[in-house]
Image (cartoon, rainbow, N blue to C red):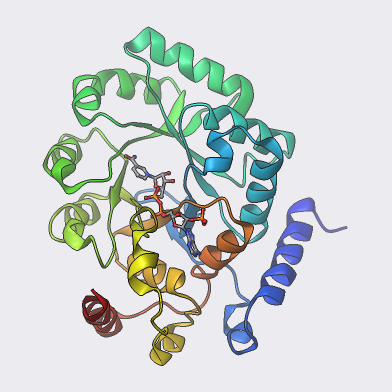
Length: 299
Ligand SMILES: NC(=O)c1ccc[n+]([C@@H]2O[C@H](COP(=O)([O-])OP(=O)(O)OC[C@H]3O[C@@H](n4cnc5c(N)ncnc54)[C@H](OP(=O)(O)O)[C@@H]3O)[C@@H](O)[C@H]2O)c1
């Protein structure tokens, strides 16, 4: 008898197929692309889900639909902060989906005791095991409390430690965290329109074996204002790209340091579109240069 996971995968493949243009179907009906977390044998699908407004507003029905659609189409990484950690955690636990999802939790405890209490309250909802990825938003705080986080990992309360920021002004301090072996993951902004991370921090992360997750793939929606009214170039089909959203996402995940890109949406149609970028071919170096130049022409 097929397992629930196999049934979901079949349902996901069928649903994905029904939403794809005919031309793309044959090449895309494979598994979603995934990347290894450096230094481990654990892999993550290359398209993730950001902290959606549906989660933030605590809308359980909308959040459930979003998460079901995301998981069925092969996604795993969900970025959650504040109350979303509980909303999403409970929905995944109710489905027994903890093992095939991966939560990026932001912690805010102000000292070691508060951090442990916060983790305990998250485990009550997300499940008893260690949290997948625990991040801080403040680079300075994480630097100051690096030993607390090492102890959390040592005690089996968290599996990975990370820092998440979305502006280039934080790159130098984030690089210091990499240098000092504080983080297993960094989350930064990177796209054709915000390419600065490719100069130093992404190569450094690649070199040091730190996993890179990308935020702001659409610059919180501004990207769509730039491409609006322009035809997707015909050559985008050479890397199985069907939409402007996929054009940005495929550019981002084809950077060798990147293991996953987060997209924020509350729309089921957009979740499927975004997950579609994880299927099929990715642009090579030459194509990436062409994509970048094309985007400059649209500015
Ligand atoms: N750690 C940090 O400091 C930090 C900072 C920023 C972001 N992040 C993380 O990164 C995630 C993503 O970054 P972001 O918030 O800047 O959002 P984003 O993904 O760059 O852009 C979201 C916008 O794009 C639209 N969109 C998404 N998919 C689309 C599609 N296929 N077609 C057309 N429009 C689409 C969404 O509208 P619809 O809702 O209508 O789809 C929304 O307006 C966040 O959710 C968060 O988890 C972290």
